[in-house]
Image (cartoon, rainbow, N blue to C red):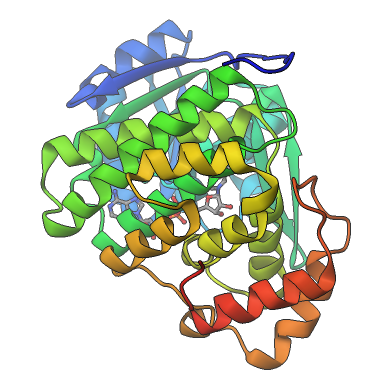
Length: 354
Ligand code: NAD
């Protein structure tokens, strides 16, 4: 039932999804008018970067296997120079959110089109958002220039993704969809994608935990990750994302594991203020409650469930609560320091939220 007025702005972009789609890379580059592409990837995925470069054949001009976490400005500047020296007319990124981030950073600096080939479930390829770091500070911006013009999802590239990364980047993706369901600028279309994205990942991740080579599960998870990424790109995020940015930015906690630990507690905090969203999340999880159901899924997936377990110090919880309430994102329930301190205490201990 549509209970309110809404606005919805679809993001532009072409998506090619399936198994073996990497073999279309030269064709997709051509569609974008690319004849001198720069391929960017992380050092651990240099072989994959080389395979993409080889797949581009005459359309490949440079390969930069230097993407690292948090998109540092100096790395992006170096890669941009290499692209310019090679006369590049297209950027091709292959890898997780870090490689996509580097591709976006070059797109921002040059205006060149980006073809993204994601290999994790983080979802960056579906958004016009770029986070960059300089002198220990991470800033985020939205700009349509960084939105990939084409995303090539190839399920084959995710088969070898380590199980821990599969789970944590999958839950990271679910967090986007969860917050989309109670977003201030939420709308029925994004909510459809959010509920389907959560359901796809909630069903796929346990199967992947049992067998990382389960092709159907890998297909479902990658599809879910795309939907969840679109949610992040389309509507605003709330308390959960603010907490994760605070914990990652000021206390050095790892990005995707932090999303895992915090999500059930952010949901519990917001439950009474967003009852419709909780019904949809619980339904997507196939669980009696959203927060409890998500926590149980994390346990089943052997995912991190406590801040203590991922390196947070108890002595830092007070400061984290204070930082988290500064310039808060819009949230369905007012964000107050005492409530947030309690949330963080529960997340620190890893207790199951009711
Ligand atoms: P990542 O890109 O940092 O990759 C983590 C590690 O996994 C790397 O060592 C990489 O080489 C390896 N890896 C990636 N795919 C693999 C595969 N299929 N098989 C084996 N190893 C593989 O991690 P991530 O979780 O994908 O991305 C996290 C980053 O993305 C963060 O910096 C986050 O801020 C950013 N992010 C941005 C957005 C956005 O919209 N701007 C959205 C989500 C995440």
